[in-house]
Length: 472
Image (tube, rainbow, N blue to C red; front, side, top):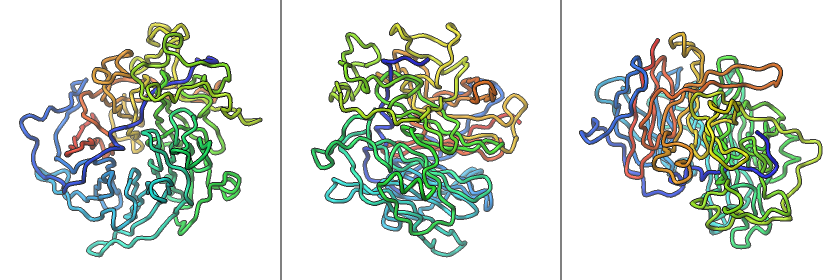
């Protein structure tokens, strides 16, 4: 559904960008007032595992050691002892002072080596640097750190749309580490940080998926796209913010991306080397109207602009005749097309909200503003026949409580089953999407261990881990 004057909507994880100080993990059973998520099919079981530290963001499983870890936005890393037992215990093993990443959003683990990535502000808050480190987690020894990369300083801003370095994923062969660096804008507008970075929009170090040899050390990444490409570090371009990355059982890399404050759908991409996925010119299969010099944004005439959107309130939607042109020769790759029956609402060209099940239209990919985060696959084929080898994602937002999402649906905050199929004619994937668990409260990540999915919830004063037992 491509249309010249349509882009999309959504503030990505605003709650992840503002927070209180991290506390030690609480190792208590679920309080009586705790409302568990609800399974939407009888062969799925939901159990509370434990309460966790505030602002918990990522949960990890090291298959080589059977150990489970989680990380917090402010830099703390915890190891969970006995997660399958009645009384699991979380032990803090690292903090910001150890690794130097105060805004820690990404983590991955491979053969007892832990990778962490995120951002730090420099130059009195006017600048920003990305950073990735690794830790060798030897038993009964203090973890030994080495640096994978630091970036040069580039422009930060004072908005909720500066997404930073976040998702990490290791290739199945263990040779490469992939990392997403999200956009520093909502939809490609100028964000100059009160004049400190004149005319800055997105640059060489943002809105891309990067790839590095897993043994890389002490790299300095320049704000120079030609150099980054020549060194082979840019894997894919034009992705606003793929907050989670995952490989399927066949070795294909996918990512779920969060869209802007315009009413466009949330993309899931089959991420391939050298491909460009459209941002900031196309998002959610819909063109960004701000790229056209005659566009005059107004919710009265453009129903894709939500009046409740932060980007509208602060006038980031604007007439923008200097918006950059699409680079010559670049062909955009579309998102995975959703066949429904769930999470496929969209705003049609007429401005009316529609359901793909009723119109027969596929969308790219999920309901606007639903914020798909955790992405994982049954790559070991442990599940029952109807789920075996398939993908799953968790939507952060709940339509009933989200001003941006509510016009489309009251649903959300759920676990979606993704039945993907490759279409040779379009050289793309289609997905049948079905809700199977609902009622999460700020879920940001999940990890699958055999047939059990451990879901971690973010919370300013403390979150929770839930175990979702899927049928085998």
